[in-house]
Length: 67
Image (cartoon, rainbow, N blue to C red; front, side, top):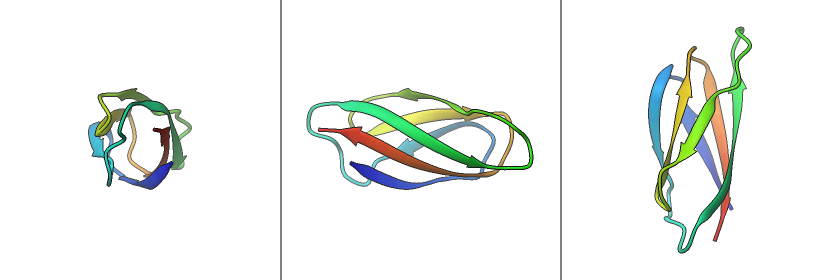
C-alpha cells in the first residue's frame, strides 16, 4: 500500500508511485478537495504509475493497493 499527493491540476495528469509495485496494482482511491463536485476518473498505466483526469483543479490525494 502506498499513498501520496496527486497535485491540484485539472486535466490529464500522470502520477508516478514512489516505489514501483512488483506484480500488479489492484486499486487506486483518489480524494478530491474543491468547491466543485466532481469524481475524478483514473486509469492504472502499469506497476509504476497511474493517470487521472479531472475537469477542475483542487487538491487530490491518492491511495494505491497492490503487490
